[in-house]
Length: 106
Image 1: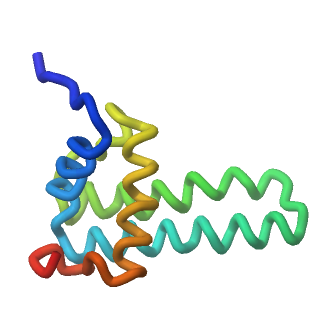
Image 2 (image 1 turned 90 degrees about the vertical axis):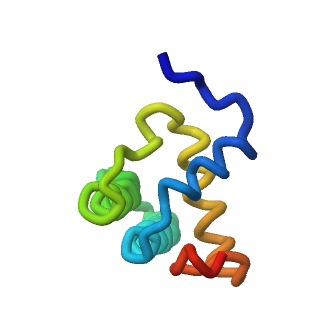
């Protein structure tokens, strides 16, 4: 039986190893960016059922990255909260220049 990761820093190191492909990182970044756009739009307009699009867009882009480019299983299924937090952390690290779409430059 596989041992569970016990801390967020340990999980984030694992998360980065599962997100090495440049196209996958671009898809994750795009999905997270669109989540922010949708949230702002839905807050401004009151949004109704459209709120259901937020996780579909966010996870949709990410899961395409895993299925077709990383060729691995998203950590979302085993570590949902840490995975979500890591998506946002990577987004802001790329936005701030700490990390790159090209993981070899991290």
